[in-house]
Amino acid sequence: MSEPRPEIVLVHGLWMHGCVFALHRRRLHELGWRSHAYSYRSLCGELTGVADGLAAFIAGLGARPLNVIAHSLGGCVALDMLARHRPPGLGRIVLLGSPVLGSGSAQQILRVPVLRHGLGRVLPQWLARAMPDVDPALDIGVIAGNRPIGLGRIVPGMEKPNDGMVAVRETRWPGARDHIVLPVTHMQMLWSRACLAQALRFLDAGAFDHGSGTA
Image: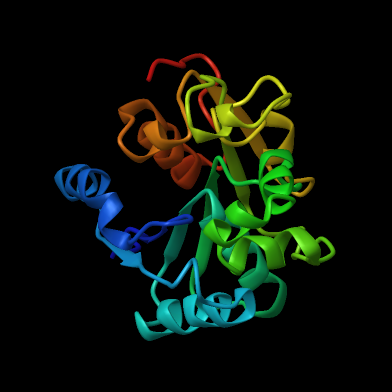
C-alpha cells in the first residue's frame, strides 16, 4: 500500500483567525490535500501558551504525516513550538513572511505608547527572546515577499526589500533548507496561487522551484 499523503496544518498571523486560509484550504481540497487551521489569540495570548496549544492541536490530529504552513507571526509560533515539542508524524514546515530574525517595523511601533498595544503580547514576546534552539534536521522552507505594500509603510526607513510589513532579511531563518522571494505583499501570501504552489512544492520535494515566480 502507498503511504498516506501528509496533511497540512495552517497557522495564521497577528490580528487574524484560521478562517483567513479559507481560499487556500479550498484550493488544497481541490488538489487532494486535507488541511486543518489552528486559531490562537494573537493579541491577548502568550507565546509559550499558543505554541504549546499548536503542539497539542497537532498531536490531537493523530500520528499521521503532518506538514505545517505558517504565515507571519504564525511562523514564529511554530518555531517556538519546535524548540520544545516534536509532535508525532511531523513532516516539513513552510514559513510565509515570518519575522523570524526580528521586525524593525514592529520595534518602532513598540516605542510609541499609543500604538504598542496593537501588537498584542505574542509578537513582542518573540522579539524579546533569544533565538529558539530548533532541531537542524527539520525541513524548514521560507517564502518571503518583495512587493512593498502594507501597513509597514507607515514606519519610516523600513528596510528594503520588504513585503510591506516584513523585510526579506528578517525572514532568513538560519536553519532553513531553502528560501525564495516572490513578488507578493505580506497579505497577498494568504491568497496567492504562486505562493501556495511554492509551499506545496517544498512540502513534496524539500525545495522550492526557483524557475518560477508569478503571484
